[in-house]
Length: 196
Image 1: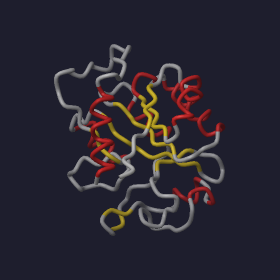
Image 2: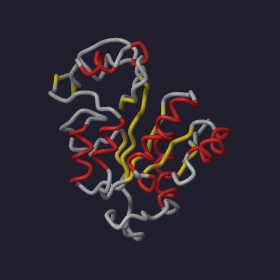
Image 3: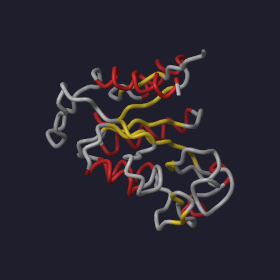
């Protein structure tokens, strides 16, 4: 519980330093309001699977300020939105994301509260297409360590011109400087933990 409280405080503090969007299509959020952050893009309505397109659309509809999503890489090098190392808990399939191809993962449905849905595991590119130009920021919790994976993310961010909508979450303070060089126009947020 302490970890979640600390993360919430850090996100609220960090929100005041997020650069304002340069694009005229993205309205600037009021500075005097509290920014709501949706962990795994869940709005609290409990209607859609975590990290799904449906719940991201709901976040946009309900004016959520920031969505936090988890990024992993498939066996064939695609970036997908999945919190766990394995797809067992959240889909109808089984196995580690890194050992499955995108086609294999997309062959399974996402689960919500144990029930099978029509939602599929989205790719990072699908999320970027969806949020581009919308009034929302995306906090990327990148679950890979390879420079090649970060390079793919940087390429997609540049391709969709969404630098002013992205925050990259860092687990290692030593990564901040190299990440800032890779993402010069993207906010990088270090993780804060309570060790007590």
